[in-house]
Image (cartoon, rainbow, N blue to C red; front, side, top):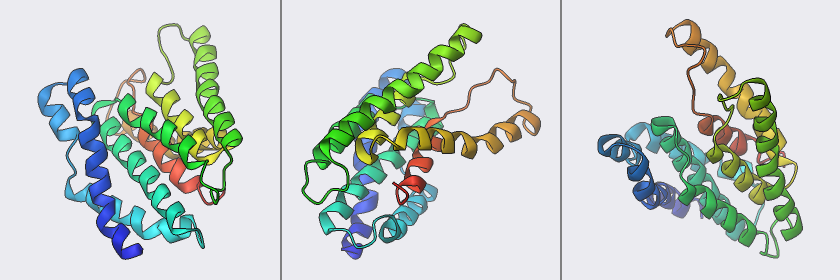
Length: 212
């Protein structure tokens, strides 16, 4: 199974990127869209790390569970790749992850029930929406998170359950904080400059998976 998934991992990531390409091309210039939906060597190495960590993420699970988690992980990887390049989390990826997470919960051996997946999806969307609404009351016109981040956390909740969104949101912020400080101090970015939150959320979701 591990050998087969080693071959399947980059194929799935490329499939996700190709699936999102029309939407990325619609919102970005042609060259940026093409670059964001390619899989360079550095990201192939990241995909290899995802594959290698799969036994640690779901030790002793059914092979179907492993394959489903690989589908989820490669979707997160593709979303992180695109968001890092374009600051866009495509609906094609996030909505597919939401639906597939709900479908995965119907599998008899899946650790999350359908009720928990539905609750996780709702919490995953409403939690960042509520926080963003409160932020906009203090900073009108400067949203803390984009709609794509809401959808991504909705997908995380659908896959990992109702406890996941808050944990992933907090962990994602901790992951990105050093990068934000470095960009502000070392690279001279404006305090008003925006950084893509998606890569931090995707990495946090993968790291939090064994806990959940």
